[in-house]
Image (cartoon, rainbow, N blue to C red):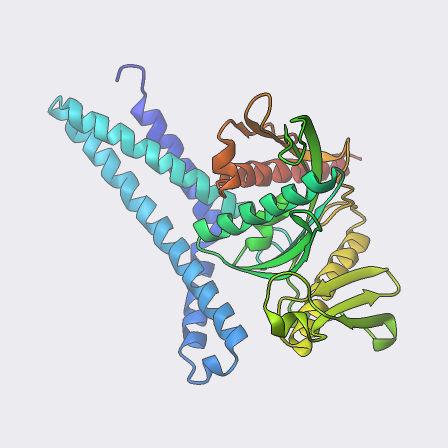
Length: 377
């Protein structure tokens, strides 16, 4: 215990706690909870299921955040009391328990600190994610499907509601592209750091000579549009095509013209949607995704920051932001933050919070440095 300075550790934890409490604005948080509770108590809340889910989801997240913050304050007091008692009675067990609790509190504070860094214009939104296979043929299509599974498992692990909206299957294996929506507060803020080109290096399971293959996939993340965004799309600006859905889904899906492709003519932005059973549902879902992408374009134009949100993602050599190496060694490494792990299977099973948190911290530092340069210029 001699090399552990408890006073310093508890002092640092309290300082970080106070900084987080100030950033989250406890008074505002309580006011927000009261307002959401009032909305949740309205008799006709569930007449609009989409709005009801949004209200209840935001309420649950805000209440959990407040409970965690209040709990941490009590745990800091308890840990300090336990340490003082251990010192008075020279009780090694109590001292060890106090040290372990401070370490645990520091970890929880680090997780809460991430929330304070999600202060972008759209960070609080739900997210729409599109994965596209890039260079690498059938291995790239398989890799795209691996990434889709990874993100869906991540959402499941964190208790987020995710829904696949469109899937375009490749001929031999894997997918050409897929779009899914994650409905949760701050889903966009967290997932937006995943946007970019991902690279996979492995012995190809599709090569009968067992050669090593490098393949790429692109991940695009956009915020879900809301009614207040006012993205007006004249009918003259779009072309709507309908066709039969492909892939799994049953006879009803594959024999009716329920799939929809919308092309935004001024920007040549194309959105396809086929996972709903009716053409009307697919058209509505496709329009929502199109509006989200146009919202990103508008934000980029206003801020004059290319790649800030969705970015220019080419899915090829020289553009990758993360590498997944399965041969000749096991390693997943983010090339922006330097964060890495050798637990590759855990990553593909959805254990990516470490990468996301490191990405959020990296992005915050990039924005801070850019702001300082602007102030000094």
